[in-house]
Image 1 (cartoon, rainbow, N blue to C red):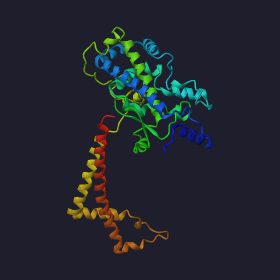
Image 2 (image 1 turned 90 degrees about the vertical axis):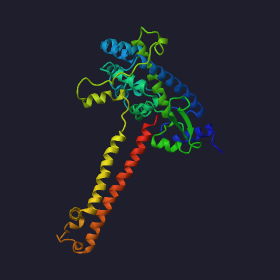
Image 3 (image 1 turned 30 degrees about the vertical axis):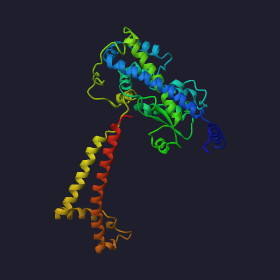
Image 4 (image 1 turned 60 degrees about the horizontal axis):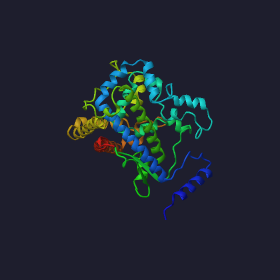
Length: 374
């Protein structure tokens, strides 16, 4: 008979107490999680769609107006959109230092600093940070940022300041662009792949998922307020319908020819999360596979090349080392030595061809998966 929510919560409470572990800040049942996830997901997707529609019509105007603002004017816009927003860079570190080692799981004064460390006045008024954030969040669906949004709360999580809720035996899927798919709760019992997907990162624990939705909910509200402030002369209803859709402006780039490591690191929280270029890796791997193929062909067709390869393999074997009394290994005068050399040289050549070919096939599959919408 399946366990009820009450049974699960009772087992969980006993587990934390018996192991001397800190109890999570909350352990909601699955119905509560589903309701909260649906409410937050609905608002996240609604605000994202509104932001997307605004950018499709007014992004160029937003950029021009923001760049004309002084730092004081930028600060005013930001603080109107988010009153009390952290003033300094990396407010999560500052909060950690101020709070010291005390228990913070239910009493931290700096919850916003831990959940949105990249949102602070000092960083947002500098350069094009806010414009980068508006562009990346408005032009790409929220699911693209799910992992990076939770990762940004690392300091708050390890310090115990903003630990997520705990819901066992379930996973939350952060896929797609609809309320039915983004923030969907699935049971490990009902979906046999849910647990594995959670472990490998294709799904999230429900507490983590709720935290991601909370972060994105407040973030999109903030970005909409900033855009509306910059477009204050346009009626709110006309922001998404009063103008035709325009081509996306060119990417925002650093004014200098070469980006410094510092500037790249400073802009990273506001840009689209970096992704591995599997197609570029495929080119490199294919070159290695072709090299392995040529190597085998030369071994078969060129006696001189074959002799050189065997010579290299024989010179780098352990049997070539002298023993403690500085005598050579006895196997060197035995035909068995060359059997080992020839066997290793040939097996290594074919192994390389097989391995690089297999890696190329896997990269093709990974590139296909990466191209699919989340």
